[in-house]
Image (tube, rainbow, N blue to C red; front, side):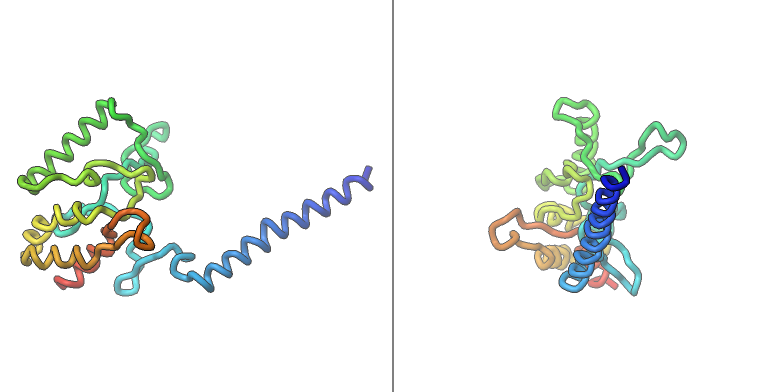
Length: 200
């Protein structure tokens, strides 16, 4: 019996070493050499401190900053682990709300968001990405229209001309990938960092 088990154990150990250690280390090393920023999470720093990632949205509540898309991610309720509470941009629990178009909760949330945005900019047409969540709940981008919609509020809160803020948005707008994939977009964290740099 040992004669049959021994080769199986040797193959198991070899494959474990190759696929569980050697291959992941080789790929990680290659990624660190060729794509060092991306392999480390596309982290962004300010004054030597990591403040976020280009790939994961953050919640900005102040009127002085541009706001991202709503996030439907949750976390366990600290008071009752069997329940969950909203935790915007929680990368440990990526996912959408899974609420459908007939959901009363979704309708009420969107209605409240629309009312808030109309108070902020009564004459503007509300871009859909300011009231809808992404499938991951972590989207770091908004449409240029969503950024321009918020320009007046940000300019007023920072006491700077709106045209300056709009020019900053235009400068931070990323085009389609390779010229034809996706839609133009604005990374909210990068835009807010540029805004801080502009007004510091």
